[in-house]
Length: 584
Image (cartoon, rainbow, N blue to C red; front, side):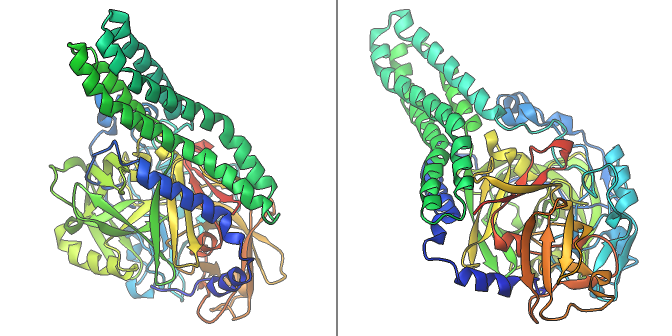
């Protein structure tokens, strides 16, 4: 399952020629975020556990639970639940490596070269029009002589739809950037008014004196969030405008970093204010401070804007992060933009509390020989440093298939599961669940920033929240999108593509290389947006080459994520997300 990627060697050589100051750009920005978030975000949140995320494609999914029930009164207190209810979609895509059970009968398990985390369309039950369109586009799955799975219809030239796959795994209520921060600001303002009323306003001078410190901290939190909202766009614009200008660009990065750290200062101030409020309550003498404490704690959740998780690159192509599910031990999972949902075995799930069965189940599989049945549950997913998705969806592989699934996952850089973060992948399902990254509090559910190759290709970062860097160019769909691909000096051809961090070295159509079965060493592959913006380019080597397939959606493999920072944007229109390629 370690495929020869289309560009590792070329990318490494380019990085080696970079100027010694080049790392100060995106590297300094992301490292700075990490340092600040690690120190400031964990203070207030003791949420533990790790809820499994939405699963992958189900060819035989029985879905009986209603996701609307997930909207509890407690969740309504946060902007996340206010803006996102249950997702009503189907799909899940683990393209070159994952094969739907529906396709398994037509594709020999041993034929697939890519045992990566990209699931092919296998959803056969759905109640949404989107799902029906996806099935029509992706159900015609075939296997080439080289083992690549593909969907012939899905590779068709785009019509009215901006993406070859209009399935959405995002919440049915669109995620809107800025809603959570605005709610946090209102909650801070309400807390300040109520605190004043319960102390000085009631004539309680001792309580008023003690309340001075939390009042200052609340004012500081409000100012930090206000300043962030007013400065982040200009700072990102300056960073983009100075791209390619030595030292000036790095200085612009320092300015951007300052803006990015402001929400963390707000979180720290809110957490600190919460520590002083019990003392105010002791002097206040009634329960009047309790509503203030509730407002401050929910504002601290809603005011979370960025959260960083380290990424370890294993076997060159495999991005691994560690999560805890339902309070269990830290578990390595593959970060896969090419699929939608979290799939693990019960061995990775803790016992901090009872799992909530959703009544949904199904059958799915990966190319390379794995077909499994799963049951869907709702629980908590903990990414560390207080980054917790409550009531997240997880597909837990059934006991009979657990051993085979775990052995398969271990091939993925030693992973114990797959974390699919795609917005419009083809699977696995089941319908009515959402991916764990959209269940995070505050603005953390806006999207996922992934920079796999930040540290010499060995390690990288994943940042939850709004895009921390300015967008250089963007395509509709995440991961399924239309891209233009050029081979050597040929004419760019628009092709339905899976932009897949879990796609190993990717795939390419035989027709693109003159009908051959392998990509010749020395071939240059260049990938562009539909309007002609170059995304990345590399020269194929004996170790780094895409697998040839007969037809269907091609797979980028890990190359674009190793080449530079990529943002999976959940706030884009159409519910299919967008893939944003950032300035570095």
